[in-house]
Image (cartoon, rainbow, N blue to C red):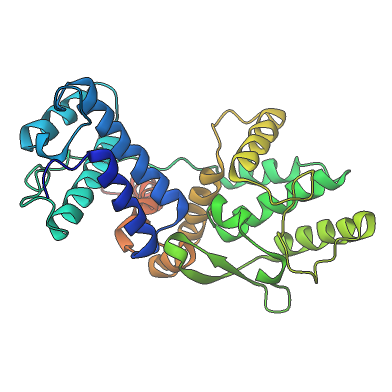
Length: 306
């Protein structure tokens, strides 16, 4: 096939991610955004035929190198690496479909990544944040339950808002989580989080007749629909400001905090990997920095012959 419009091919590729690989809606959206940014770069740099759409024949190794140079002025290396990965996957798909003969992104090296240390809250600040959440109204009770659950389980905010009432097993203190790529896992949940959820759902039933025995979203918005990840982040911003914490905190910070506190307390790295739902152990290892830092501090402070 010749002179295929890149815009059309991107659409076919995104459909394949959903239909063939079972990628989540968020992942597919991320791929689409990255590829559409590349398409815009091609159009802006006049790599299309005169008066026509950008076509795949206009893309070669030099085109992609030029695009990475363009990104380098505006993005972090982690972002550039992700966008390059999206391009590699896209062109690999086109090679398999025999739209093109070679992958122009295959020989381009991924930018060397800076080692980033995940932000987290110390134990006392984490407790301070949770204890600062009011329990006066039903939305307060919901918020307390939400953030107790995030810290107790270490789940992603997208996984939290996807929870249904039937996903919580009070008897065994477990929750069922649907993670990335529709992968299901079972995660323990602490008694404080369970108690907060129970209190919230009891008040919800008493005031509005919404029973936890009826399958539906575990956490509801003010209109009694499913809460969104964006709303959870906005609520957390308000709580952090009211609490007076100086550290920037996002829902993902609570996931980092969970992992850091677990490893600090001696939890096995592979067990934490399972709890977080990481495919690769190397992804989990970034949380060991705190334990190592504290180990070195203890060594420097205590060893008689440093």
